[in-house]
Structure formats: structure tokens, C-alpha cells
Length: 332
Image (cartoon, rainbow, N blue to C red; front, side):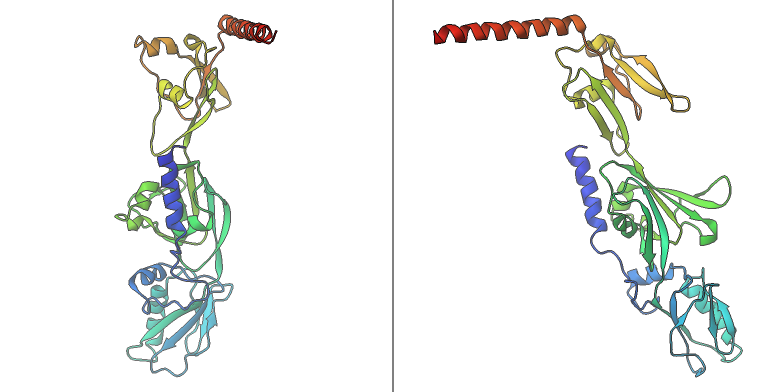
């Protein structure tokens, strides 16, 4: 990973660790009682089992002052109107439902709904994050907060974050969202750079219970054999690389290399096998053949030039012997 790429990942991890959470798990949250940012966050939150609410109706003494907990079946039991299903609704939706039900008892009911305690609910984070797995989330959390809970982006993180949501949990509020072939899930891809940009705050959406957040891994190419720095090299932000560029990342050919016999080992078919593609680096460097673009997971193999390697070993041995003789003579 280059310095600029590490800087991008570090910057995003700094952003997601700056305490972007608007609501702690036990804070009171009423979408009419907070600032604009927090109000937007709460308004999108879906109530769930074990969340605790305070529901009041102006000029109706029968409404309880004590908090009410949503039961395992998703209901709250209220005086006069009985059980009302609350789980899966936003605060605004529930308030509208209660307003209609209380019209039988009050001409123009003014209903307030306040969440006094959020119950933790699961969100799955997988891929190139430092702590992948199922994370228990209390209250409404935005995408950057969820990534922060997963320890931030890993160094191998790619340029794309995919969010998958069951349609029963509501739509994904992103223009690029699509429905999967089974018709059960909404799926959307978000570019990491767009998420970071202050000009695109709409990408930092509320993550709902049971959502899956998947951070892609960056493409990797490998250079092995007779080079100065063999290894795997990560490509970020739609970066592409050719044979010569990969060779440059590996700090060039070793003295014992046979560049004309280089091969690209590329995954084919079901991914269990690789095909060898000839890459005459000598001709490419001389401009007699075009440079070859590499694909994700390609392995560039630079073989050993056996006669040259033997000659170099012989030369090194001769140099060592001559040096030893000179030292001996200088002593005696």
C-alpha cells in the first residue's frame, strides 16, 4: 500500500472514530425534541422488541407516565385502545397510528412518542474491516459509525462498500439500490471516496437491524521469482497495473533473472486452476511487444537464468578467493 493509499484509509478511520454517534443507548430520543441531524437519524430508526417508549396524549389523563417496553411480539399495551403493534415502525409512523386510534377519545389528539431506551440489535459487518462479525447496535447508527464499531477499514480495503437489506426492513435510500434476483433483498454499492466526501452526506445512511455491510477487498497482484522485492501488491481505487508497472513495484529484475521467459499465471474457470500466459519482458522493455495489463490475483513469475546464475556464483567465488589471497599477502 502506497503512502497516499494508507493516508486515505487512515483519514476514513479517523472520520469514523470521531464520535459520530448522535444517540447513546439509554438517551431519550424524540424526533421532535432534538437538533436537525439527530432528528433525521431518529426519524429513520425502526422500533424493535424490548425498546422502551414514553407515549403521551395531551389532555388525556389515562395515558401512562411510566415507560412502556415493546413486548417480544412487537406490541405496546395502552389504556383505552389496547395492544398496538410498534416493532418495525418509525417513531413518526407509530405516532400517526396512535393519533388515528385516539381520535375516538380526543378531537384532535396531540401524541408524543419518545424512545427512552434502545435495545441492541444485530448488524453484520464482513470483508476488509479490522473486526468483522455480528455487532450488537443500540439505537440508530449511520454507516460510518458501524464501520467504526468494526474497528475501521483494514489496510487491504478496496474502493466499494456493499449494503444488503431485507425488503421487509424497508428500502435502501440510495439511487443505486437494486433488488436481488430472488426479490427478497435490496442491495446498493457505495464508493468509499463518495462516503468520505462532505459533498455526499446522503451516502452515510442509517443502518437498520439485520443489515449486512460488506467492505470489498482491494485487488492484489503478485510478483515472484527473480526480482529484488517479491510479494503481493495491493491496488486501490480502480487502480490498474501492467507487467512493467508490477515489475517496478517489485523494484526491478534481479541479476539472475530470465525476463524473456516470464509468465503470468492467471486464474481460469472455477478458480481452482491457472493458465500460463507468456510475457517476454525483454521485448516489452525494448518496445517490440505491448505491455500486458494484469488482472486481480495474477501472479507474474520471473524465472531464473540458470547459466547466468552459475556464472555469477563462479564470479563471486573468484572475487572472494582473490580478496582472500590479497589479504593474506598484505599480512605476510
